[in-house]
Amino acid sequence: MPAKRDQDFFWEAVDRSELTAQQCSDCEKRRHPPAPACPHCGSQHFTISRLSGSGTIHSWIISCHPTLPDPNPKTVILVDLAEGLRFISNLIDAENIRIGAPVTVEFGEVNGRRLPLFRTVKNP
Ligand SMILES: [Zn+2]
Image (cartoon, rainbow, N blue to C red; front, side, top):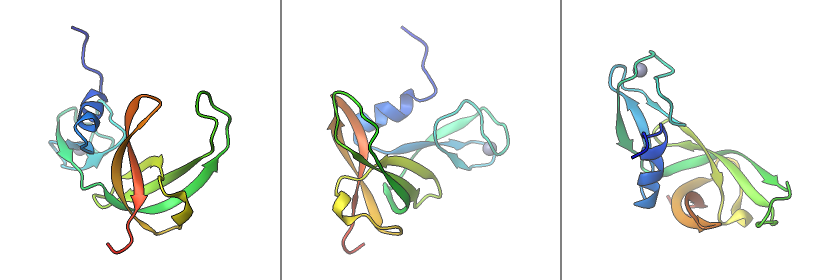
């Protein structure tokens, strides 16, 4: 059995439609993306914390970089999650893009891989 990688817990949670992050066992700060040590105190001890999946759009771009097999432009968003983390993803309903717009996570398949995506929330 291959050794676990730092990010395995994250993708296993995505397969269960859960958004998670590491939480330092010493200073209790959450971190994302997954890393072997806490960027705040250097501790290598952590637990897995489930996130709400709620946040607001901090910034966004339309990515027109040609990719295969998905040649369509993507709306790439930087989300300020309710738990204080920033998360990069894609916005499903790009027509509603706005800095500060409330969003919630929604899991979907992209090129055969389950991913955490986001959708704007009308009345949070
Ligand atoms: Zn820490």
